[in-house]
Image (cartoon, rainbow, N blue to C red):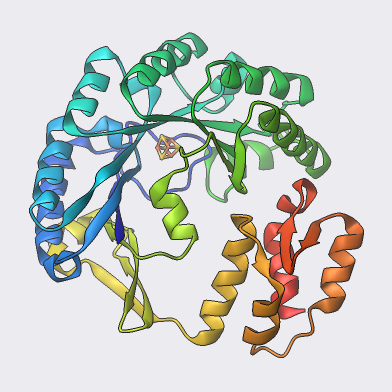
Length: 374
Ligand code: SF4
């Protein structure tokens, strides 16, 4: 079983906080899809005989490209592998691109899951984040999307400059009142070389301190749980059966193939785990799409162990203490760290497994690092 990821690297403009690889040159969209079909054809061997359970269009902004081009690529891939009867086709969308017509077209093309980059329902937050859509647009789009797609996910950002608990509670409740089946919740991070970083370093705006950010996140976990969502990854929450298939498969270290610039792949070949990555610069991808892979590495046992510990904690599937004891070749004694984290209220130990608490999710990577490296 495989899942597929397609990176669509186009956005209409760069948001002030974003450091993803993308381009704002729509004139290259057709050349990109031509290259994508060449890359796809060149990877027939990886697809042959495989059954695909999910296809995820991410980016960038996949909703900014013509739906017909997405549909054509879906037809291409259908000829190269099999699909499960309940294939999930997910697409990340900017609210600015969505209306009744575009959503109907996406649904007709086979999209079953829409992930809407709402980011906020508070006008001042949207302004700070450089987003053009209005809260009313998002409410209307969400309601229409819920009528058309099997799963609708809303992305929310918290911890923007000036945000306090009262603003965040209003924002989150507005999102929850729309009853999407899935929520992704991101703490705003200030990445080097972004406009947001420049504004903060010049003292033009100030960023919430760590304590405020932690209280916003913990408040969200309590509030979202009241509405029946399960917290299945640090930043992701869903109603039963509505998790993102591609994302969960990649966090569970199940095989996936990535297409397009900067896409990654993970395959198991004759018991060996292989990670691969495509060239990230669009011009280089367009020049040689049939040869887009620039990185290929077989994971050592240590690397597999490290990934398993980091990822099983992040998705809270429970980290098997026996696995930690047996597989850790790095010679670290983790029992002192476990006792300390239990005492701090960051992890729970139940029936031989370790789970993060709400507080522990804030320090997921730190905790994993301490368990591995001491
Ligand atoms: S729409 Fe998303 S990917 Fe594009 S610039 Fe904004 S945050 Fe980045």
